[in-house]
Image 1: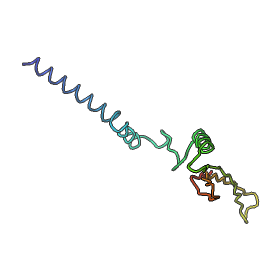
Image 2 (image 1 turned 60 degrees about the horizontal axis):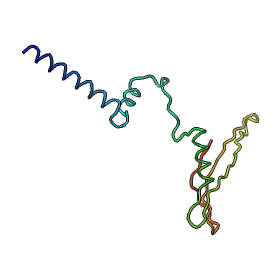
Image 3 (image 1 turned 180 degrees about the horizontal axis):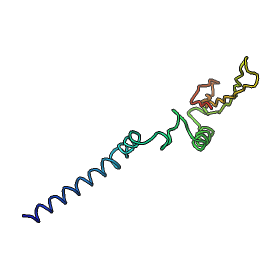
Image 4 (image 1 turned 120 degrees about the vertical axis):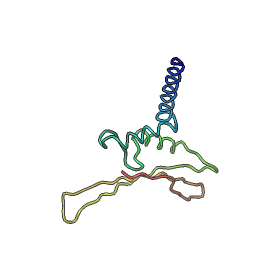
Length: 120
């Protein structure tokens, strides 16, 4: 009787451990673990990018893909870059440059449609 109780306790503990591991790390690609970290850790302990922030590597991939893209009826994607310089009337030393990069779909009939755009 004692051995049976010990075996049941060990099996229940092992099942609970496997269930905990599954829920925290495997179920929904670890979202529970991520939620746990976000709730319990200090905000300086992990990196959170700004909304829609992408890396330079991703930006290069997107631009290369856009340059190689060919659509129906010969349409292509072209990249346009424009710098906007912000100045302040009250402070002559203030100067801020904002770069806008747009990826446009150019059709054969001459129409241009914005596909994606990025601001830095």
